[in-house]
Image: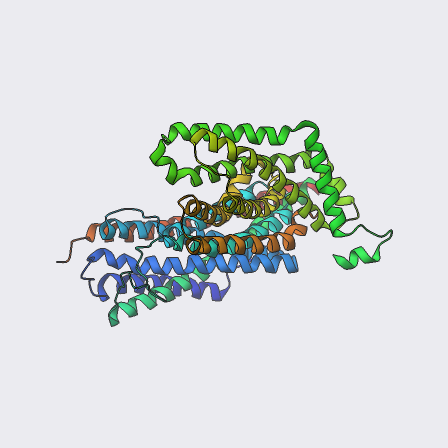
Length: 231
Length: 235
Length: 49
């Protein structure tokens, strides 16, 4: 394996600090929310992970297109890395959402647009890995993976739109709010914790993707060596 | 794609003709044995019977779940047909023949999609009156049939593409529903919502949103599948 | 009145760190295994020569 680049080492350290600071801001700096109490502190991580989960989904679809156009295996490694890291973060988003929903709405799960779309997206991610697992030829695996991420990327927003037709109790944090939805008001300190969490998870996301890409090139190296030996 | 076609000799059949030839081949093969449609049909009836006992479909419940039961049945029967029609091509080596044929690859996609759609619609056309008789609801309404047509088009558009992928994997048949269902959720949900509205006698304005989503889904996914199908069958 | 929901909060943060930790561990273990594979394959290649 190539030695770890210095930039990655720096990014590792920055990520650890970002996570530590974000945890501190969420746990101690931000004031306690009056309606929901302490559990609201989970929300900063919930939003952070949701943001990178969606970001990864978009990145994966775009690198899928890039792979189909260029046929460059580096795009494939990038795509796998993005999908895998966001699968992990999206899983966290769903679990954290559940933990928050239990005391706030008195239920672990509601079939609300965001939750349902998140669950469907997670299933698309899992299907993606099952698809890749069933194909031996690396080039075909990359091609099919790219096609599937593209389909998933197109279908997920439509899923969200459809489920939106049903009523929602999920609070609207950013963007247009319907009149009948509860709005969460954030004080200044909450906003600092909120935006720092977004920043922190973005940094961690980039760091993990970088590591996953390096792992991907190791995998390719092993596969090529095996092929070489068997010939 | 197109310049490849223009450069070579002899002149190739047009996209329309090639598509039509594939559809004709599939339909005449099916007309000889009816093995695919009959399997889908029997399967659909079994699913409906199971739903009858699982959901205790009495008069009150029936009204609210009819659309859901119908679409679940169509979706399951649809995967059965999609799997069968694509793996038949693969097993008999027809796929290689089709790929070697001097036709545009999209003709293969459209041909397979249209024959898959024909099988699905045939099953639906038989299931609807049977369901109507069994549960004493009239499902033979033009607006409902329109929704079923739109929903089936979207489902088959994605399903044909994904079945072409799944037959080339190690897990084959098992993989298709896993790949297809999460991507097809919007079309199924919109179809259920629209059918529900029609059966409940709602105003047209209420059905309009799911109807629009159905149309958008159909157009978008036919376009996407058309664009990427080349990558799926490429050797 | 603000309800006491600290248990849920602690659960949430524990889950977050454990999940991220497991993922990083999986990355590390996978890369160790691959490096071992590469070593084995290299020695096999040398034997072949």
